[in-house]
View 1 (cartoon, rainbow, N blue to C red):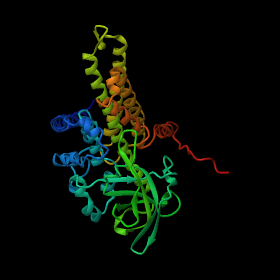
View 2: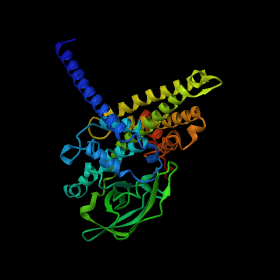
View 3: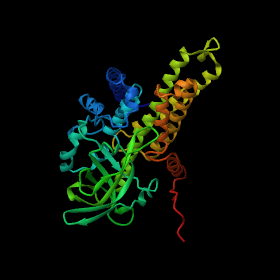
View 4: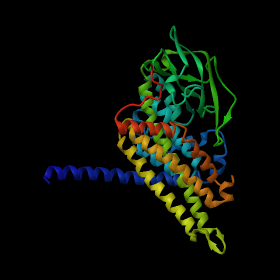
Length: 398
């Protein structure tokens, strides 16, 4: 091995070691903050359908909003891995509050920060990063779910802006959102898709009656009746779809991190239960059947974490790869749910009761197998990488 190669390997090791030390310190800081401010009231937050704006303001004061955004835009200039660490540490104390990390560093806010004009950033970004306002993504439509390119919400040019007509469903945080990043169609074809920014107060923009997800959180249908959106509120014009959907891989990393973290929360709760609960004159952790359940859960946690970390670390700048993200999401979404299910089984009636957060984690983790790209869609993406070709889900044209 020549001296240059030794030098390069040593340099790489030292750089990674520095990152590891910084991230370990960051991990401890986030965990301490969560235990100090979020441990009390974590059950109540889980059962509150409203977005926890108080938590967003707490995180803003402590540098946990905009973790992955550049410092010039008011963010923290961190890596995707830093945001994953924050989600994990918060979720291990207060599962519901981890959603604020997702909202503040992933999802529509990250896409907005990536492509927004200076005018748009000045108008919205600082208030988003202080927790003053909330942004939501209007993407799914009644007839455009996994087949998102079938969306029909139209943007028709009208003078110095566009008239928007259509509707959206399953928009998370919509009851509490102040602005919406809305996918629209400027003209036919995939290159006709882009996005606009809409204030909920715009004329012709109405929200339907709130409906509940299984996890207790609420969403509203969004209705656009010839809503005028000025051109300065256009985020991405025609041809912007591929840029938008690339950002969805970052959304999926946050989804993946939360699903595994709530699984680990349930694992820890069940472990404490197994160490103290006695039946037939013995602690239930002494039964081999229970021990095997915990062994299986631990294997899933450790394997999922490796896949999650690989996807996050490989995305050291820009957006993560579709392959890494799809593998991590498909595995961790199922693992998180399975772990919550087994933890509930170990805890029996207490695990099934709303007196425990385990049943919330069970309900919460189920949704991530659908949201952000279903497990089946992730497997489609993985298969395309395996066979090095794209498999259309649409019928063959005759």
